[in-house]
Length: 182
Image 1 (cartoon, rainbow, N blue to C red):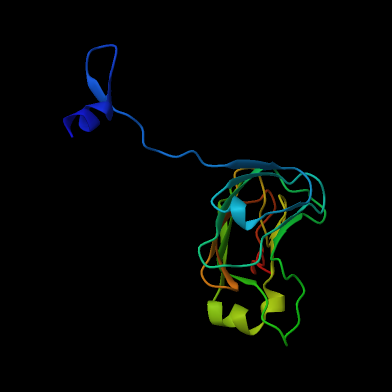
Image 2 (cartoon, rainbow, N blue to C red):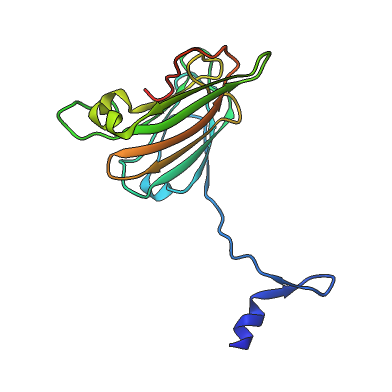
C-alpha cells in the first residue's frame, strides 16, 4: 500500500515530492474543409479554420452525452459564412430530427462596445426542428459572429437536442435581432 502511494509522486530537482499528473489529453481536430464528426470524436476540441466560404462541420446523430468544443481559429468568411449543422439537417416535421437550443452571444468592440444574444428555448426548437438545425458563423455578420476566438460548446442532452453555449465575435455592427441558431 505504501509503495503505491509513493509511486504516485516524483521528486523534483529541489527535492520536493510532486503529485504525478493524472490528467487526460484532449483530442484536437483541425478542420479547414467540410468535416463530419463521429461519436468516437466526442469530447474533442475542434480548431475550425472557417476562412473558406461555406465550410460545414456536421455533427454525429444526437445521443445524450456527446459533446464538442469548437474554437474558430481563422475567421469565418465574410460572404456566406460557415456552419455547424446537425446530422439530420433539413428534416421534415413528420420525423424526429436533431436541433439546437440554448444561447448564441455576439460581441463587437471596434468603436462602441456592442452585444447581442439569441436564446432558443428547447420546447420551441423541438417543435420546429427544421428551423433550428444550423449554427451560422460569419466574422463580419450583423446577426451572427465567427471571428477568431469565437467558442461554441455543444452538449447532446438527449437523442435529438444539442444544447448550445456560443460566445462569438464580429467586426460588423450588431443587429437588433441575433440569428446564429437557424
